[in-house]
Length: 466
Image 1 (cartoon, rainbow, N blue to C red):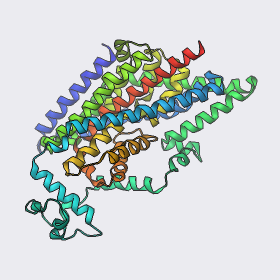
Image 2: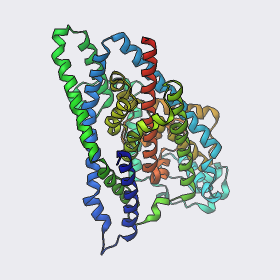
Image 3: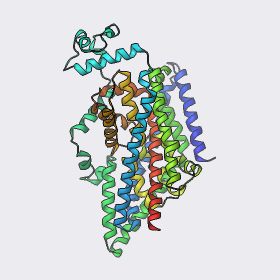
């Protein structure tokens, strides 16, 4: 049976198992505890294995790709072209997200009482100095004073969840470091520390620097190191192939463990705030489907001269891996294998373009941020102007560059986007129940975008050489 069918079956079995576990869990039959103790760890092992391979694979594949180019000028041309395409596709993705959310209006399709209640919460946050002010003073400045009937003045009502607090602190730490900090942070002071902490931009910087210097050395001085790099690259590629043999089992464990942990003992928790969350999720998925099913395949067909069938069949294993891991970096080894072997993109291109894409190309994440921010504003009866939505496009694009390619990193970035248009960053707590599922979907789009750009760069480069 083909690997993608095995993975799809594993995903379905994981869904079925998690539902049974949530429904049948009891004190006498604690299947949830069994799942967390004996099944969920294998899903974590899967992600750890892929990340373990991904870091050295990025290092050696970029160096190998530069060596195979044998021309610094060609490297500069490909690098500039790659980054330019990534920035353009990211801005397009944000724009698509804004169009979808303004047409769908998921935040407006909610009972009026809930929206009025959320509006007063927003007014309290906006007018607060250090303590929650008196309700009557808030109603005096609020456009909807009649909502007092829906709101309690108790400050505990507006307490921020611990998980949300942590993400707000991470965003504040990033914001306080200054506008040029991402550039400073891209240059490592210790490459081994960068590898240990999965600092992908720093690893990419070192790999490019190392590769450029290596190809400028005399052949007799460089051949031993070039052979070492090529051998190491082949070893890590082979490690990926071995891990993929057990991928269906790992995917089952990952899916079952994630859903059981999310649902807990209450299956209804998955559909909290059902009306808003379903419409919000639908808007996000609609935008992501447009990118994955229409936009990228069209680019691949027009620029890359590749049929829809070959494109989708070529990258489906990478897409399934992205869906199950929610991490572009963890999926990178599989993406490189699919793009090189199935889409027939030269290794010199995949080894350079894809690692950079896994770090800076977050089209799915950027689209989701646009939909989430505007829909949350709609829910709280806050109208965002055209100028504010343009700010969202720019902020979401810049924030996605260098974002950690790990599960739910987009939530931290969304805090920066919310603050850029004067909204409450604690609102991310409202969309946490469905974030993991949407994270799986947007990672598929991120990986699909990486593969498309790799195909475009390779085709354009081949035409220039001919």
